[in-house]
Every structure is written in structure tokens, then in C-alpha cells.
Image 1 (tube, rainbow, N blue to C red):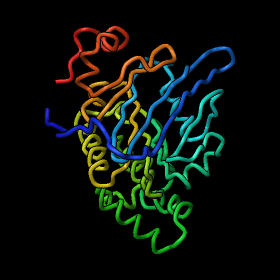
Image 2 (tube, rainbow, N blue to C red):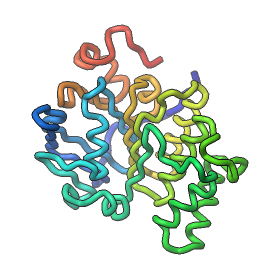
Image 3 (cartoon, rainbow, N blue to C red):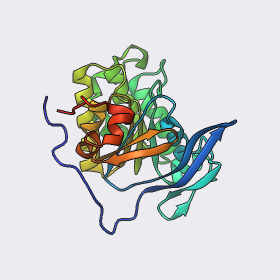
Length: 258
């Protein structure tokens, strides 16, 4: 298998984080979902979230975007406490892009019409809208799909479109929810390269949540494992795979990334 990521960022010096989640706890009715969770994401860092179903990975995304509010703790963007900011304010003011596991596009619109519809919301100037659309069409090699309805695109083409849509607002933080699910090997490798290129070319802070552990670990700098409402292990992919706590809770003894 080709090497997707040739380097990993292990530490950041004198860098203000793009996002900091501090001591977050949340429950649904009487069920605790997250218990005193804290982590940061820096410019140009790729962070992976792993864990069994129900561990709270999607809940973290919902807390970051503002779909949910924590029972305790705070969400900071830079040095600003945004815990009580609504989702539309966070998207514009703090530049968040989000790629959902399913959907994320208008099925009956063409590739270009999808991009145009979202650009009209996020970008005021018409010339800037068109410039950004053409840039993303070129970057993701979507020109031959420009006039094709999204409903008939392949799984990989749809994912490229949704990532392009998420980048229209020139985000500083990109959230990718189960981006490798139900895709073939070549399409997954294509997406991994796109993600790593966004890190190196755009300096975007990226958080990936996925059950495909090998695919996720091949393109992140650092990863965390959630279990029983807490972060039970974190580190570089190599550190995490050899961590006995991570092995017992998630990977098993025989799991390898190469």
C-alpha cells in the first residue's frame, strides 16, 4: 500500500489552538455520553477520533458545530468562548466546514448548481463566488461532472463534491464524519490524499471520525480513543496501536497498521 502521509506533526510550539474543548460533559436523559473530555486542534493538524458505537464521537462533532450544548465545560475557538453560540454564528465567525457521513448535497441539482447554491449563502460578492467555485471544481477534478446531477454520481464523486461544498467558506476547521464508510479501496486512498493535501496546502485543522481504523490512522497526526464516556488513550498512530489500554478497549492484540 502506498504511503499516504510522509510526516506526522507530533507537537506544536507557541501556537494558539484553533479549537479547544475544555472539560466537556453531556448526558442524554440519565445516560452519560461524555465525561470531562478535553482536547485541542491546531492549525494544520489532523486529529482522529476512534471508538465503539455510542462512545460519543458524533456527539463531539455536534458540540463543536453547536447542534448540542454541553451540561458542563466549554468550547473555545481561539481565545473566544463559543459554548453558547448558535450553529450559524459558529460556521461563519469561526470558519467551520462539516462533511456528514450521509448526504450533504442537493440530489436534484448538478455539481455546479450545488456549489453555486452554497456559495450564494457563504460568499457575498458574485465574482468571489464564481472564483471560489471554479477553484474547487479544478482542485477536485469535477469539471467533467459540472452538469451532472448529484443523485447519479458515484460514492467517491459524491464525497469529493461534499468536501468541495464544505470548503466554499474557506474554513479553518474541517470535520469529517465517517468519510471512509462504504467506499472502495482506491476511493479511500483518493480521499486520504485529499485530506493530507488540505493539511499541507491550506493549513486547515482537520478532525476525522471513522470506524475504519487503518484508513484513519494512515492519514492523521494524532488520534484519540473514546470509551465509557472518556478519552482512554491518545497519541500518534504508532503509539496508540502499541498502547495496552487501546488494545484492550478497541484494537485487540493482533491489530497492525502496516
